[in-house]
Image (cartoon, rainbow, N blue to C red; front, side, top):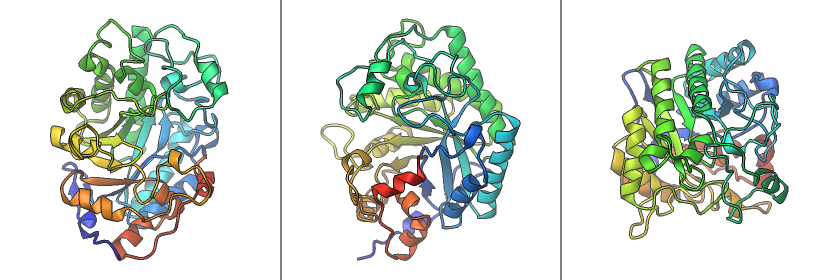
Length: 386
């Protein structure tokens, strides 16, 4: 039976300047389709197709900020990650933005620094040392998708980031946010999840600092908060700032930064006080209960504790998460829309972040509105991502 999705197609005002036409967002997904960091016409066409088919907001794949160690080999292909600096890259992004706007959509870039996940000596700037808050990649022997060779390479500790290096990274985010505004983007998304740089400041296992960037959850959130403040100063008050965070890490799928709702409130409160407007709690399955004693999702707790617009993401439109669906043909599209609507209708989240389902089917949002059958997602569609 078709699922009633009319509430997903109501508008949402994000700021005086930005109103989304509906609640469906294309979630950020790495693609490696921008040679030399420059997005071409194929990238513009990729995003435009989704905007033409009822996606209100597109959050791009991770985009390297203007720092030499921002991206490299992180267990994925290291080349063709788009950049948010340099004349050629910004010209390419203007074409992407114009195409999405012409199709009636809005678009944020997801600004990205891989931090500890970048392998030393890789990327376009191999001489740049990778940035690690405390010199450690993370604990070994936890549940991860990283292969043994990569883990061996990453296990050797390095020196911690210096305060001047931290300042350089903050400045890089601000510079790239300003560049994004000049290219016409409608807001800024920051990738603070999945074991990348922000996340390793948040997580006590990888942040062992004793200065004001370490300590309790408020101290461990200070780096991210300073980036948010710098981005806000760079783009002004009009552009919304979205922040992605997660409990799980690539280093440890079962990790938790916040063990209780009270800890989550302190963590997110630091980010909101710094200027975050929209929260993007990334989970592998969107309706997984976040804490013992409650069936509320991480998105639900985020919205309850902060009052900020919140996006649910994680296997929406699929029957299994990516790492549980590692055989061809698994992950059938459209199988959990009833669960999405049940959570949405009870107010757990404001936005629905759709990832792999929109890779398989650019018209997924239109089909969700009309009740037409979805195009199934299988692992074969990964070829369009990486």
